[in-house]
Each structure stands twice: as C-alpha cells, then as structure tokens.
Image 1 (cartoon, helix red, strand yellow):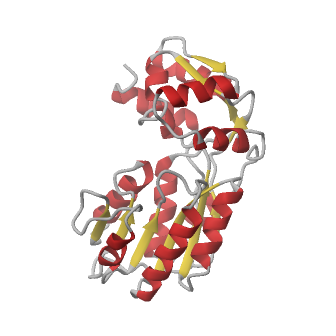
Image 2 (tube, helix red, strand yellow):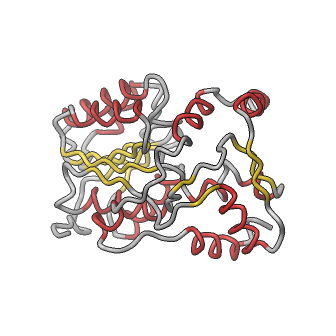
Image 3 (spheres, one colour):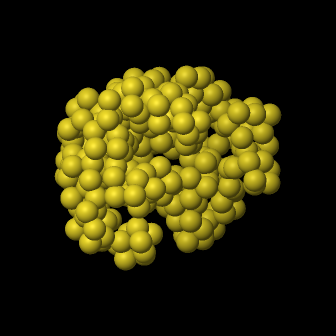
Length: 276
C-alpha cells in the first residue's frame, strides 16, 4: 500500500483502549514510525472513557485518525450505540480515518460495524476472534500457569490470530492509503482446538498443560466467582460453535505477508519466562 502520511504528520492518531492487547501494540507501532499518538484511556490527558461520553470530544479534538476498540467487547449490549455515537463525533471533529476492531462471527459486533460505517468517515473494519495472547496476557495466563485451561469450548476449532498481526493491519489502515472501506477478517494460518493449544503449550513449557471442557453452568459459576459479567458466557456459546472454523486471507490482503503461526507465538512467549 502507498500513501503513508510519514513522520511529517502533525495531527495525532487517537488509540482507544490504549493499554489493552491490541491498543498498546498499535500505539507502540505508531510511536516507532515517528507518528504523534494520543492515548485513549482513563489515565491519559485528555482523559478518555467509553462510559463517559463527555470525554470523547476532547480526546478527538485535532485528531487525524482513530483506532476504535470498544471495551469490554463490541458484542456487548449498548456497544453499537456507543461506537456509532463516537464515530459521528469523530467525523464531525474532522477525523479522516476510523479503524474498528470487531468480533468475528458476532451478530452484535456486526451492528457495531454498521454503526461506525454509517458515520460517513473512511472506515476500515478489522474482524478477529481468539487472540494468541489470550493465553499469556491476563485472560488465560493463570490457567496456563496452573496447567489447566478450563472453558466451555467443547471441541471447537479456532483460527487463533496473533495480536501483533492485528496491530500491524490496524496501523497500515491508520497510516496508509488504500484501506478505506475494506473489511479485513483476520485469522492465523491454522485451525486449532483447545486440546491442540494445550499440546502446543505443553511442548514449549516442558510441563503438561490440559484442556478441560466445561458446561455453560460450570463456567457461569466461575464468572460469578470472579465478578465477571455473564455476557462473556453468551459470547462463548455463540462464537465457539464452529462458526469461525475457517481460515481467511485478511492479514495477507492488508499486509502482503502470511499471518503468524500459533507455534511461533508460543515459542517466543515461552522464551520470555511468562509461563514460568
């Protein structure tokens, strides 16, 4: 793709959820490219909070592009209304490019995509499902450390995608011409069940890691015990029914290279010591 703004760009790019798995990577890549970045978080100045619409317009002031990552998930109730309203304010503020992180196989997330696309801005959708980094950053890290991954996923196969690939696609769309109007459905290069993932992690950690399928009731009890919203359970039962068990070419189309394999991620992550 051509038409990179380059380091001469003076208007910042807003990165929402800038401390999250993808947002932190997007922000760091932009900094590495010499581009001005405005972090979109509750701790930033100006402050940005998805739950406080009064923070949106100041965060969007004099911004050239925005990475939209809705927290906790675009499939949650009210998300489509929020990102739609945010995008309208963005376009009204003169933001040229909007890059939305969406959920693959989630009808509610598709409603969020349509709300952002209706803003009139130059929109790129990056549609992903399970991140490799779910096993090493927050969500399932404790499970891996405890040698048991227990989820209501049955034998569903997933095309696990790397957060670094997602960030690379997002940065390309934020900084280069030719991505506006595109919908990039991104996956890794292989379908893996959670049993397969446990085997891959066993191989790189040198200790046995098991996958234990749970019933939805069992997982609901775990969510309640950890004060997590039951909406996560609905997401699991919807997207882990085999609907995403196909590989796509989103990474290749956006970047002109193949996506990172789970094994490469696992080997590199094991070398950091995060899995003990």
